[in-house]
Image 1 (cartoon, helix red, strand yellow):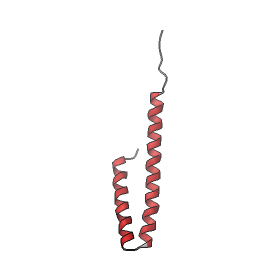
Image 2 (cartoon, rainbow, N blue to C red; image 1 turned 60 degrees about the horizontal axis):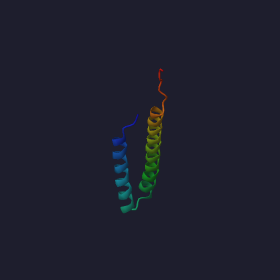
Image 3 (spheres, one colour; image 1 turned 30 degrees about the vertical axis):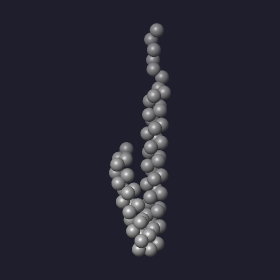
Image 4 (tube, rainbow, N blue to C red; image 1 turned 180 degrees about the horizontal axis):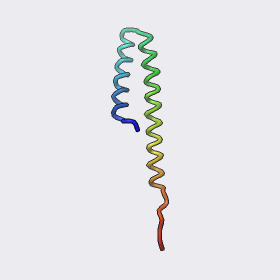
Length: 67
């Protein structure tokens, strides 16, 4: 799996680089950081959905009952 705190740190870092790119008016920095942030956010949301789906599957797993 991926470490959510690591992805949060990477997202914060990329956000700061994006702000810096805007301040210095560097199109290359702005575009590259926007694209990378989009991929990171998509990956994080995908992992979140998969983990929630697994949790729901575990909760809805039928239990055997002996009568």
